[in-house]
Length: 541
Image 1: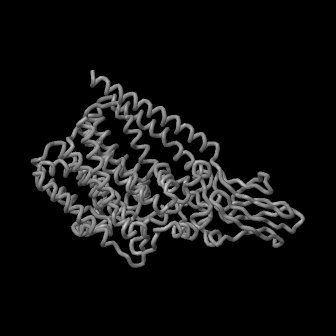
Image 2: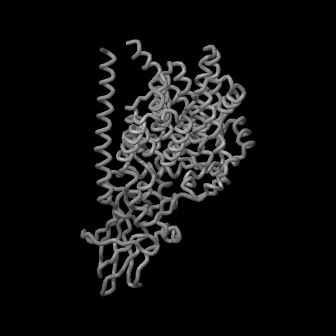
Image 3: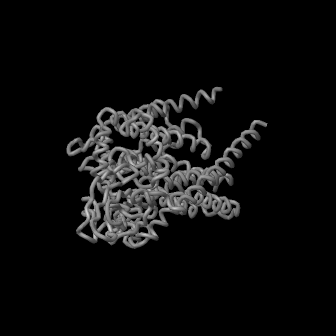
């Protein structure tokens, strides 16, 4: 009973901190504002949210992304973002839905970090709370939350400690059944943010290299292989349809940048970190202090802390121009786009060290530190720019933005060269005796009337992006669709008057992948639950 009450109080504490974390969001609408000074991803993710209402049956929504039928749901994971849509329906407001969703994301970041430490590192409550606090209030997460508003990365941040700590426990404690949690955690990261998945694989490789003595155990390799297979099966609903689309059409990926140009100068990074705000990616004072203390006291550290310290420095190196990013420019690493993304890994390792060291202090000083971080956080949010900001604090503003916002990520490659005509909703005909009337754009339907005054069929190039699964009806009869030269939907229309409706469905392969993912997830969850209660039963005996 005492343990249950303690858990209730701890989770209540996390919930209150989560509300506080977002209090200026509610009061000043700043995180739901797009600032031209900061260039965050607010508009992109607001459009994603708006496009999730029918996502299980209609992968493409036609009334967002400037109403061109952007197939972003094929290429950007959406399953862990879907609860925001459910909250929007429950609260009858997308603006309120996203606000409550982000409070829940912050609460889960606290809670999952806390229990990951308790279960997989065998830490006490004090040390675990400190880690969850340092992790959730980290400067880099603040930049993601209040500046960049990278919701995919924020959701992935929930599960990163769970994945790393269960992985470490698998290696060092020979907890072979951790493959279940590892697979579930990696699946949730992949279904939130694909780049975070790539980064975690890099983390795994480094951790394995630095702990290679544990890899002599063949059972660990078996567990890792099973975990990788399970992750692949549970996430097949995402990666298989994406590959199918890319192979068939050729998709424009998000901007390919020069990695070296986006790596940080070490001096600038340190200056930013001591300024410690949410305007630009930085480490934050706490991370800097842990690294400096670790370097100064390195010879006095325990072996495990030395390894964590070295890993922190390696990933710090990856954030900077000192790393030879030029050599990796034409490799899969260019998908990372911004080398400073590795700040999140530096933050993870230093938060582990920081929690261990700070927990040794007197409780009075720990309390003062927590209060100081909370006050600093509030000041950083208030310091965000208010000029040149587009407020996204009402459902009407969200609706207007979804109609007007353009983003050419994930366009068919041919469409990127013809984006202006597509976004201007220009129909193209192979005959002049054709006209369009009654254009109506709904979430799952793009309908119009073709008046063909010719005596034969005509080809109509519709300003809707073409993806596999796009279908069209003419006078309620299914007609074939093709891809035009400008990467849009091309249809043949009979003479006379035809009412055309364009809509989208998942391909057969995509539907099969969804079923495999669902069945695999259910089976793995059942195995996990059975193992949990079996372990608990053995403990009670």
